[in-house]
Structures are given as structure tokens and as C-alpha cells.
Image 1 (tube, rainbow, N blue to C red):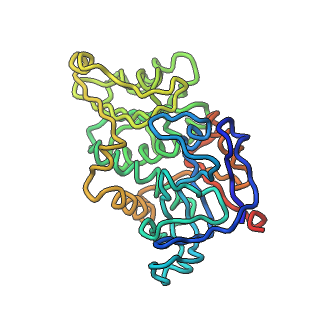
Image 2: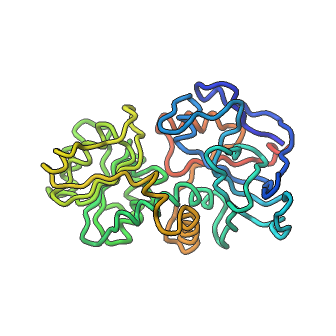
Length: 334
């Protein structure tokens, strides 16, 4: 089998595609032939050796926490009925191993991929999709809302734009570049603003038609996240879940600022996500069912498994849209 391996922390070039020993399932585990593996921004952060709230992995390692494929073999204690099943799994923060032609997964992490859902979409749903479901449950959007979404052309952003429109809300997306803003509009946004251009704050105000926003979904942080959050009116909800900006930190407000602006600000990932009824497993199931029903329509950008370093570089330099997925090709499985 082949896998992407990392032996030192550093730039994308530290990811090496090479032949490795075959994966063997332990008790309660399965090995799946991987057809799609998810790439997350956190993968690039950990690869570079930055902790950012998560412990660094022990090296050498194979990255990748999301994988879809077909169950090849099962370990002791696992129902043999899983063999041949098309599945998707969140492998876990510590286990990883998805960037490979074959990956080991805990049997209790498996979901059967619903009919009509392709493997790349399933990967998008089991990681990014589950987070979007949890964030949306905490947002409780309504048709009365005016929503601003940062990084609206990203994997999360696109799902949030779709959900806001589905709720009947007015939604404005912030994205970097004309092609991305066109994509955001294509997802149903009422407006899209290119934050890479000077004066984007003024254009955001114009897109809001002079009204205050009621909800800001902030996955970027830094100056951009702050600028978006400052469009909120009294009673507005700032829901933050990421820090993709170059500054590398969440957008936060002091208690005095919250009182002065009359808004609330909540971190909607981490403990607040895990505490939702039914836990993470229920969020994954809901996301997958949503994809099967056409409620969620993720945009996917694919790279060959052998080009994982290129995928990381493109993601870090904001050249990607939607969910980034690695696809092992036939010639990867020598």
C-alpha cells in the first residue's frame, strides 16, 4: 500500500508519498480501501508544527482524520457483515492515517454511506458537515435574520450560506477573489464581497443596504473577523469557530465591548459542540442524511493522494474552494 508520511514538522514538502507496510486491523477495528480522504486546515497547522490548541502528533505519522472507502478486512470482535460495505469515518485526532490507499478505523466510528451520496461528499459531511450542523443548531437561524458569513467559499462557509438561505434569511458572504465571490453568489447568497480589495468594509455595508446584521458566522478571526462582527446591531449574535486569518487568532470581545454593542459572542466549536444532544455521532449522521436529502450540497476540490503536499500548499495560500479531498488513484494502489 501507499501512504503520505511526515517525518519532520515544516512546509508542505515534508509530506512524502511512499510505499509502506500493509495496514492490519486490531480488535474492534477495520481496514478500508480509501476512495476519498479529507484535508482540513488543522492538518496544515499541525504539519507545520504549530499547536493552536491541539497537541502536536508524534512523528513519523500519516495525516488525515476523515476517510471514505470500502471495508476490506475486519479485526477480532467486528461483525464480518461490514466487509465490502461502503463507509465513511472520522478516524480521530490522535489516530489519523487517512492520507493512504488503506486506513485503519474503529468499527464504532463507521457510517454506511447513504445511497446517492458520493464518497467525497461523505468525507465532507463526516468532518466539516458535522461541525456545520452543530454550529447551525446553536445559531437557530430564522427568516428574520441578516447573516454575514466569513470565508464563505470554504467548506464550512458554503454549507452555512446554503443553510441561511434555506432558513429564509438574507445572507452576505465574504470571500477572497472574484471567482470565489461568484461561487458564493451561485450558492444563493444575496451578496458577496471580495475582502482582498480595498474598501471591502464599505462594500459590505452597501451589501447590507445600510442595515445591521443579526448573525455573523466567523471562521476567519483577525481583522477580517472583527470587521464582519462590527456590522452587528443590538441583539446580534457573533458565532465564531475558526481563525484562518494570517493573524492566527479568534475574533473576541471584552465584556465591556459586548455590553456597549449589545451583542453576544460565542465559541461554537469544541466543548459547546460536544455538549449538544446526541453527541458528535448524531451530528455526523444528521450531516450525512442532509447530504442524501439534498439539504447540504458541499463543493469539493480534489487532488491526487500523491499530490497531498500540493493540496496543503493550495489550502494554505487560499487557492481552494469548498472541501479539499485527496483521491487515491488506481496507480496509487500498486
